[in-house]
View 1 (cartoon, rainbow, N blue to C red):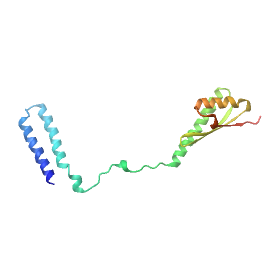
View 2 (cartoon, rainbow, N blue to C red):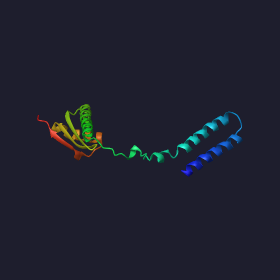
View 3 (spheres, one colour):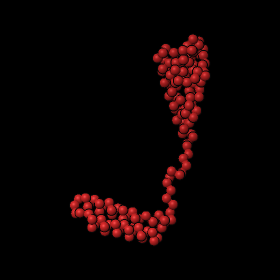
View 4 (spheres, one colour):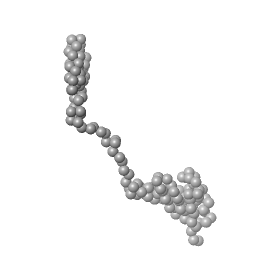
Length: 144
């Protein structure tokens, strides 16, 4: 408590000294304004200790992920990726049905339903488009 009173007295003494030294004019007005903020801060400094409140930031709070929501988003992403791959394969003349499974943000499995003569071209097109290993791609042949 005594440190607080000493700091307030010191700030006030510094203010009196500034009043004596500062010339009149626009600059003095700005210096007085800034100095008044310093006085307010010196007076308010011990208030948190007086109220004995613990001002912790909300950054300490833990964040929980909604697993169902994340799974739903990955599911929608997988559906859209499958449609985009089907369109891309169709542009290359490959008739295919594509099913994509995503786990934890990564492509886990791709299933291609294609004619047997188009299977290697379909695998290569998907592999190059997504830059993935061919072992993630499963091919199922359409009945003729």
